[in-house]
Image 1 (tube, one colour):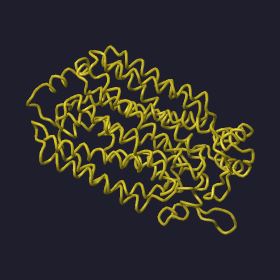
Image 2: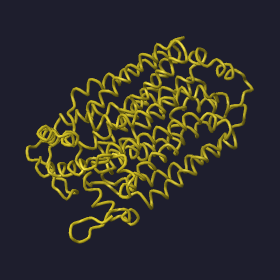
Image 3: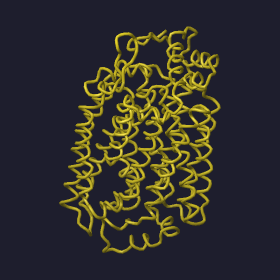
Image 4: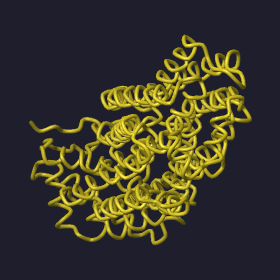
Length: 503
């Protein structure tokens, strides 16, 4: 049955073929790579064999009974093991932007998978700390290329009225990757002395899956037409839509491509006045996504639960539970994002996250001292609050952080603008990963209140500045979103009444 989009001003006909669904799944494997790394690093950091080999001072500190609960993992080099990946991803995202424009989305996805497989081999076989960090950096390059190309690919092959659900497949696979990593950590924790090597080496599996998938998926119509391959672009569009009659949408893409060709320096164009709304929102969404505190919790969930008094196995099991919650809740976003819209999910989550962060902070502030552990009942309550926090993030700020930046830029600045979003995400992820254990040592339970304050700021930002984009075709954003928004319309060029634009 043909499915015309009722939301777009241009009727887009389509049939969802099995092939296009396979393309979505294979491309979304890039999220599996990213998620596996997020989940694996925290669990490996809590393994005694890993600490003994690379961070013996941390291991010795961990064994001292009177050591401060909040500070026993405070070590800059241990944090660098986790955070170095994101610094590399930050830098590589700009190279990935160029690769997306010059080579296309599909070759960039393939490059991401190659970097990840090589990094997994180096990390799993690392004989010393220096080689271990090199492996992490290569992981970062893979993440930078994957996180740049995959969300763009998914947004460009999806229909406007399904774009949210299709794009969120990336975040869904991120959550599945985190869960798989937590399960692997739990399974190999007692395999001495090489459990950590197995955990790091298995990162090559999602990388290999993405590599295979890069030969199955097609290039996006927008990318082909943008690079001058109009006939191939039309064929790709027909495959994506599952129908032969694609002339209306093809003309729309060709027009956007012609406008894009007039822009010789897209990064310079991003500094122009009319690029401020999408650039500001894309950067701020990434900043806020990290300052929810989610990656601090997901990176260091086993460490965090050990701090609250769970033994090593119990901490890893608790991390598995949060991983399951993360995956299941992301399905809520897939179902709801194109029905309820982006704004409602973001605002609802701000309320839920605020309650969970404040509740966790109060319990830890009142009951977890420098030595000793939490009462079992209180520790269980904190785990429940953490799960509720993860739940709300998984259907809101997690997927929206990738969806919104991938859909708000016009073609001429799309890859450049999304590179800024990815690099901002990686920078903030690096800072949080590098600083969290030290912040926990110095701020103690106050770290939960720190993130809670940011959640309040996020809610205000969404209420006043983030427009609703559900159902709007990517290349119609300026006319249907930015030019009618009460704040951002001031940055848009005005028509002089004769068809010419005034700046």
